[in-house]
Image (cartoon, rainbow, N blue to C red; front, side):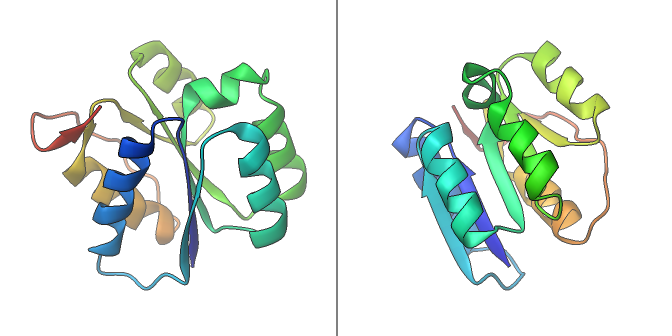
Amino acid sequence: MKILLVDDKPHVRDTLKQVLEQQPFNYEAILEASCDQAAIQLIETQQPDIIVTDASLLLLFKGAMLDRLEDQFLPSKIIVTSSHEFVLHAFGKGGIDTLRKPIDMDELKSALLNTSFGSHQENVYGDLQEIQ
């Protein structure tokens, strides 16, 4: 399994990567990108199974990345992160898993496990260890 982390903040990607490396599932690679264009290149060349991306990066290009994902790379599962509840609600209606920022580590683990096994479960926001 290949996982792609897309966020413009390196500390967020670093923290997410540390959490992923401690999870109980096997992964082939954890890839990182700081913008949509780099993410699109990695998606096209590496075809990740799971993409964890900041919603603002998807919106900057008017959904170009999401459109390309839907058209060309349907097998990829997407987890969208945002600090804006209305954004998460919109993506959640499309069947995409969402995580509210600051990201709760237990929610991230749950979303990754659910996504890796192909099931969808509503996330509950809490006050545990978080990344902003």
